[in-house]
Length: 423
Image (cartoon, rainbow, N blue to C red):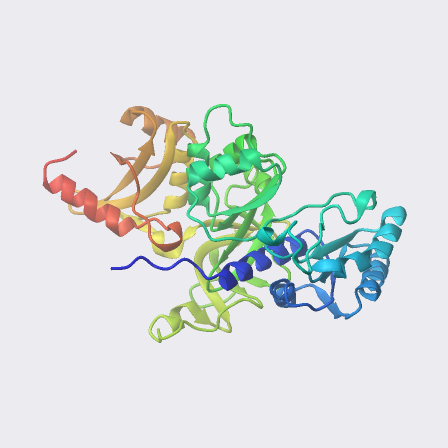
């Protein structure tokens, strides 16, 4: 069987451009002025798809820049302008000079040709980083987006050599990166790190902010719903499960099993609808009605609204364990286990016991041996109130697509080990 081909250059450009557009929208950019060009097309498409942005198309770059300057001055919010490569970006200079002297927030986003065509006389190629001299507060080359097979150690080395950057990781990938950081690694405080996908454990967020970058943000969403909520990971210290506030243009409801909204602050399923939400699964008519209802996406995540309107998750509906008539949610147990300094990964699941009913098990990936009684005491001190829990140690935990823990696989593996006489 041949390995899957790497993502196409167009696909990588699309994902990268959407990340740029989403980040700027989350940072408060209100207006984007487009001067069309072939090399800036992925950025143009990404800004067009980003909700909450006012777009204007002006072909002449000088006129576009002054329009953006006026919009930023009128709204008091940053405005951005996008153009293609070459000398097109030079026409932004007069407006940038005025913005600099007047203290008006203005961003110039300019496309460029590939690095291999720089400094060799290629057409439509110019040094864009130093183009505006001292009239800008900063100038950065984001580099060429590429799909690569970089592992955690290579990413750590890259962050050490490149002073600035933007890094997007799932919570699992973030934990793997932290585990790969060598002693004495200086971190990358100038990086913005985005933990994308699901909930982030407070212990992981705390370690990442200390060892990697304090500029850590959560981007909660899924392939069906698109981006749902965004917020700073520092909030997890006060509110475990926090994933941010609803993203611009996204409607989020907490609903019961019948799809009716629950009172503010109560637990229910997260339902989301936004510009990037899908309407159905392709060629899967059986699964579509369970996920796509009432014109929105039922995420399967259980959450509640905090008093200030932020969203907090408390697990997934299909992860609930029924043990002796008691409903057990794995997420709080796993979060408590990950607070232990020796634990790198944790998964809570259920296995049939000798008496016939299910028992709660906790699988741990740890850097050192941990006494069972000590671990039980550690969890109880952090609010885990289960009378009986059994432990399993593993080198890795089985996960499916997106890094989701495969609890059924853990159940099967543990049952097989017990049948062989394992403890």
